[in-house]
Image 1: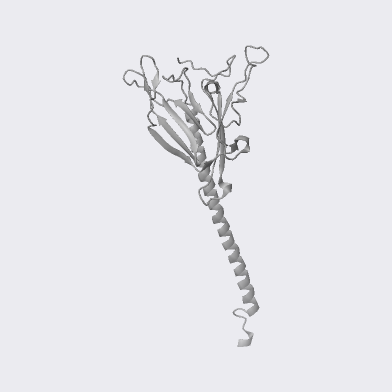
Image 2 (image 1 turned 90 degrees about the horizontal axis):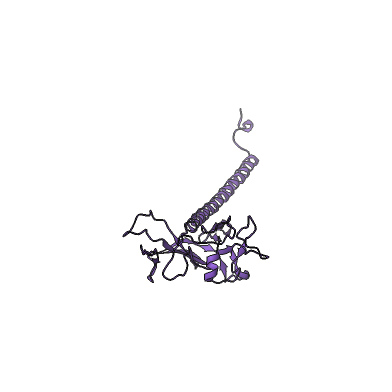
Length: 256
């Protein structure tokens, strides 16, 4: 076979077509890798914010469901909710094993959850129980434990739409009997919001009427993360002293 009749190798048009196809396939592959890597990072951030938000909500819910009635030397009535506002609340919680301490049951802890500067902080104060009167004294000392347990947290609701008045906690009570009735209708729920959009702390009388606490917040992604990775959670917790089956289901501490 002579040199002119040989068909081995590529002609110039074939080479150009092959190179063009290879470039197209390479660019498509690199674009796919870039998109996948970017989406993988976004998914990772979303998973992180979701896990963080759920853990924090579980902690808050656990504490609110562990409320116990406590009578102190500074309160006229036994109660489980100490103080409450749209950005913080304080409750008495008991996670002890009930082993006697100096002949008395361990005193419940006073726990505060407060939001400031996009951070949720938990403060814990220990008390001392008087075994004779069963009254607990928390003194005036600073909390024994203060720890931030959730960062990059923002509000989902605001009082009157004012961004400077965030709402993380809403408080509800059972409606009062109407039309001269001595009881509320059956299957009544705690649907009356206390101090709605008032952006203030609850009064003593309002604290004693709280039957349901609504918690809501948004966990933002770390700096540089996409805004779409934010996670919003909401949960409702009933106060343990509120009996929805009672004729007048007002929260009542029966311990004292």
